Length: 477
View (cartoon, rainbow, N blue to C red):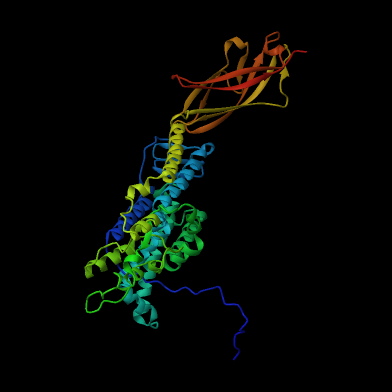
């Protein structure tokens, strides 16, 4: 048998040790249950909410209509050229993440991240099927037999159904949900729909059931970015070692003289979904979910010691508490120059988006002069310019628009293929129309190289109208 070379460098790969978090009760665990139910409810229910937009528009409240390149969110409709709204929302999401991380550490990771939410759900199913921590450890270590096969089959089946529902709910956001549901079960849905459901089912099953904390540690970049968002006033979960050390076991139900409050019960480690020991200090793997606080407080209650041996505190609090000085209030940590700046930036972007949303016109036009040729001279000496007009009707009904130019310009307007200056644009569609402007011989536009003009588009029967500035080219020879 060959022996390993003594000069060979050690392997940088460490095999994953399965983590079996113990059940815990407390305010942070309850908060996580409520948030998980809320976010899963929003995710699964939202595609089924109806919103009446009229006969020509989809009635799904939230819909990413890629086929028609539009995004619907209740009463809001975003067209493809308005992607800056989506960009603004992404900027707000980033600033919000910076704000919450600066104020309270990785609260997103611990409470709202999809990986955390679905992992919590998968662990809940695992606990229902296999039992709590000790029972799951025993089952993991025992050889494959009828009991292990049965429990694993039930657990994996439940995981698969959750994962399939997750992938199915996602595709419902991109087309009419009731119609797609029928098509999925009757085999009439598109191949892309089935492929998307398959991919999301597989990734949810693998990430929530098996990878779990590995996604947070190795795949997610946020643990490495968060350090730039945090400072000495950021609230995060920490162990008060000046109160807990030196740790030791209970002797006849009491803490020995000179011993700290920590009785080394390992409760904080056993409930941690990341498998870390918070008593070792801040670690990249910690998602600040607060479960270790609940577990430690439960132990402190049982032995009659003060709570919050593990709790939310900042580095400045640590210095103050070690010196016996009362720490800052929570609000002084939350409201400080850095978080106020993030709040102002976040609010500024949000206000800007709201203002832009309400200032949008229901009519949008684009006028492009035809360049080849820039103008033509008719047999009677009239100078004609051609324009390609794109007229977008963002309303839910067919609308008639009348095109005109100011009378004083001396120009006349014609629409190709139509007898008058009016054109009908269907609801929520864009019409392309060739428009001609004619300048009679001897008129001002005909005798100048370039004449600025304003073309008006007025909605019939209303006062709504918009304009577009362009130029008239031409000069008599």
